[in-house]
Image 1: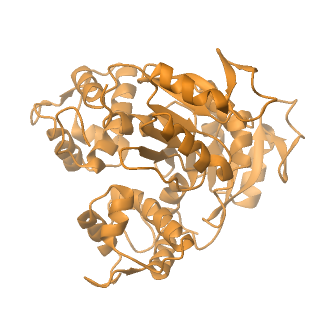
Image 2 (image 1 turned 30 degrees about the horizontal axis):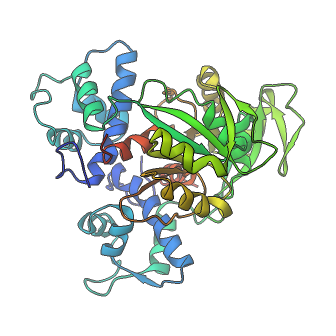
Length: 210
Length: 210
């Protein structure tokens, strides 16, 4: 399933690359030009050995003792993650959460922009959020196919998330970021990632005493 | 920093335990009683060897060939993650995103409930969201100290996220789930986790061809 000529990289490593890229972006913003697996590890709570091993899959980053060139590594990771191009994303469900996502300032130059908004509520259809007009779900298949959109975010209430997902998959969506607290069923070849605040909270309670 | 008598478990393993627990909860909901590292791996895109290795840190789960008892494993992971008790969480920033979080149905019986809401906007203070009345930021220190709250979610706009964080830390908060697209500085002993949709999207574009 992997593209980019990196077929052999484990999915779990791929999952860490966006985290590395985010840390590198922050270091660059802070004016730094060189970093080390040790510094990245300290920031991320990942062992420096793990970081060196992960990055070694892509060959030729830095040398023992000289550190990583941040600019070079950012460019390389962007290329590996396929975000040198900008991806259009459809957003379904324009309640409180959908509005917050539509206004989210973190997409920036990180490879994505929201290209269309959908909601099933006739009262919302036609309203404007940011630069976009909310379209009815009935427009979704044609809009996604005509713009050749491959990614979608699902921000509808849990009871509607599966049927919206089915509609998205039928329209050609290949990757879904799901905010609803349910497990989505998708056919092979379609990916789902979950935004789940409880996972972040549970990760912290491990370290808290009662 | 680790509690629970599991001082030697790497943080990266801890980070995967909530993911395992979520998958187990789903299997249990589907009526299943036994699972395998192979089945979990298939669902999660993590190798079964990795899963067996991660779970072996806690000793005595299942036997080669007999699979894992889902109920036992759920209970054990809840204990390890310290969520047998329920944690109260403060929520700061009741804009669109904060409202969506306050209404989120995914906290359920997963160890957390929102205990108080704060916003700096005088027009919002006193309004009700769900069961809660929005309190002014000036009430935050006393409210958090009197309830002995240790966890908070930050859903304010990025320019305010650091000052809100400083206020939370001063009030005794030890873990922050940050929705704002900026890096937070916190003193040693305070943890931060990030909710970042771009990380989920980038993880999927790796697998997409142009």
